[in-house]
Length: 299
Image 1 (cartoon, one colour):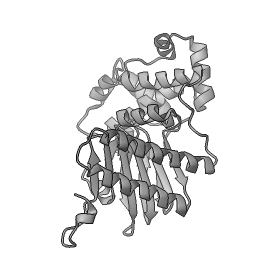
Image 2 (image 1 turned 120 degrees about the horizontal axis):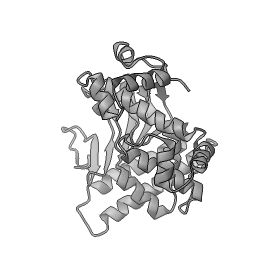
Image 3 (image 1 turned 90 degrees about the horizontal axis):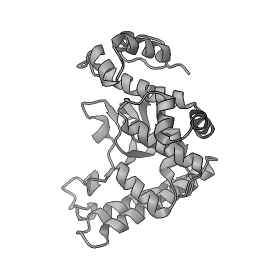
C-alpha cells in the first residue's frame, strides 16, 4: 500500500484511511473534482496548503487559502464550491468526531472546545511548522499500513495527539487562545453541553428557555455564559444553527419550501419564511432563486 513500495510504474496512493475514523488525502482534486460541490462535515477537517491557492465557501463566506495556510473546520459546517489553482499542493486530514474526542480525552486538552466556539479557523504557519506537520502526516500514512496489532490504534491516537500539540503551538504563535485543559470551568462545561444538545436536537428545541431547562440552569445564566465565551447570545447561536441548516436545504432543489419548513419544525411555511427573511434579509424562495447568493446575512 505504501508509497515506498511503488515501483515507478504505478502512481502513488493519494488517500489513506484508518479504521473508518481518519482519512489522509494528498491530492485535493479528489475532493474538488467530486460532482457534489457542497459538503456538510460530519467530522473535523484540516487542510495544509503547501503551494498554490484554494478557494472555498464556508457557511456563505468565501475564503482564499494560499501557501503556508492551515485551515481547520468543525463538524456541521457547510463547505461549498472548492476550486483551486493548477499548482495547488495540499494535504487534507479528516478525523471522525468520536476519534477526535477520544484523542482529546487522552491528552487532557479539549482542542474541540476552541473549534466549537470558532467553528473554523485559518492560520498562517512558518515553513518550519509546515514541514513538521508534513512529517507527522507521512508518519501517519506509514503507520496506517502496519498490520493490526494490540497497540496500533493507541499508537495512531498518540501520533495525532502529538500533531495536535504542534497545532496548539502554531495557534499560540499566531496569538490565538489556547484550548482549555480537561476539567473545564463550569461555564465551559455548560457551553459544551449546549452545543452537544444543539447538534442532537434536530431543531426540535428552539428557545433559550427550553435549552436552559434541559441544562438545568436559569435562562439568564445560560445566556450570559454563551455571550461570555462566544461573543454571541444564546438565541443568536440557536438561530444561526437553524439558518445554516435552512440554507443547506434550500440548495437541494428536490425539497419544497413546505418540506424544509417541516424538517426544521416550523409551525408552517409562513412562519419559516418570516424567520428566514428576518435573519437572512430575503425570503427562502428569493434565496433559492438567487442561486444561494452569499453576503446577505444579518447580525
